[in-house]
Length: 296
Image (tube, rainbow, N blue to C red; front, side, top):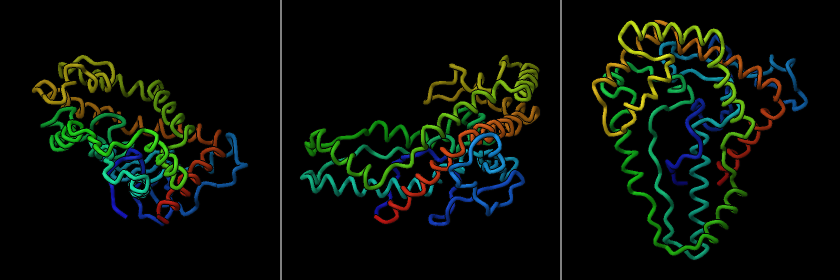
């Protein structure tokens, strides 16, 4: 089975070995062999004890932290297995339909954050910021831009009906592992609500005061990251680098990232507990998709 880099799921979960199953973690970082209860009747606030917990790997590297919600999603390795299987089945289908020269859209290289928590709360890599500010590594940006420029040039003459038919067949044989709607919903809601939490707001205020002391006027960390003066993907100014460097220093002083992560983790766990049946089913659905992909 060929391995494709075509992404079907952002790198939003731990990359454990395929076939090992999902591993869940306690807040102190120790593996928890007991999976969240898969009894679909479990529901409501009383089920919170059965919800997966957050995990902090390297305290200084947010990219190694894991939110509770990630326990109910496919891992990056599992997502790549599913993506590869789907690519292979799609190519076979198009060949059998009489279009052996059909060419899919090119794979898009990874860019920016590599995990769900990597850039979720803003930048944190001081070394990268010292040369790239709020931008991804130069090599990543160039590879991504090149893939976008190349685009898809399909000269097979395959009609949309043939492509659609193969897409339907592939979806039936090996479904995608995109997070279920409830998973995406809770992820978005928890992130939005966490920004309004009193602890996070206090951390933002401390960060803002720190930035003011360094000559920068922003109310919240994301205001700096989203400054339109830094939006050009082809240019990294001295101002952007200086701002990003000050941003990271002030984040550390105000403990912004860890505070935000802890608050969002608890919000997620509360929300998941009220929809535990749906979340357990989402985890099982992802598991089944991986199993089908491995059988290809």
